[in-house]
Image (tube, rainbow, N blue to C red; front, top):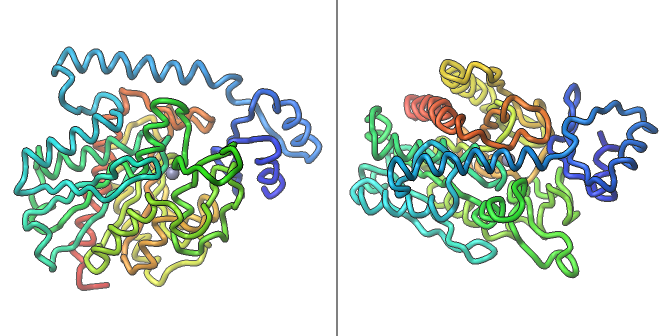
Length: 393
Ligand SMILES: [Zn+2]
């Protein structure tokens, strides 16, 4: 594993999945370095196979399907409203958040929390029947797109808004709980995945290398918790942790939300992809005191998802991040835990077409609605779990 990771920078590898005991790595290799990479692996006795010869046709296929869905959508509803038929871009999502806030002023507050590195607004919604003034109500926070390329995480956030505001079928969820929904935590990166590089993960911070040969900080390594232990100071790497804890405005904004409501946040869910997992801290592999409870709650959430999941996807698994994925430091989930949030999780949503290869971040428009409804079942279950155990922790 260490040897493989050491090749990341010299061979300009894009490591999609880090190798783990019993688990394969998935790596995007620039064409010019393919031969060298294979030689290095062979000389070290690391078995490998080429999963996709050329990623480009897969990207073009996603574009084509999204565009078709867009044309169908605009025929149906004039293109004005957001749906669960495709992935919507930053402008469309922000327009939707504004509409929701304008149409439901008694229930929804749109917060402009500050600016991203490139100066974009960073916006989230507060949903509350009591304007967040009832201090006894627990707060549930749902965040998505901290990692820009993980498009499949957006529909569940938007669906949460639909189910809490527009099409309410579970009134207990808003009567007894206040919600913060933060659909695009990394707006610069997200915009960049639509306009330039589909598989961009980090934010778009510059100034870290002369001439900005490499840019961007992995926001999920930039938080002030175990910062720098299991991440890298190499700017070119996907897990570059920044110049220090909270060097990045986007990470400071997320932390600001968590600080503001620390005493009331019972559940924090950071949506990521991929792998069909619900994971908890710590990223070092040590377990927090309530690990057993977090595990139990996660099992209930995964059961709720599995009951309605797409039949071709595997069941969700549950565990500590370092034990079932890899060690990681400076992550948002752990920072929430550090602040004292009892239940703090990452969801890893299902892989695209069950692929373990490089194309697993792509999104089939036909899966968008399914991703939304199945993930919502987990979020709902978690929200009720913490609400019903408020005085037990
Ligand atoms: Zn992620």
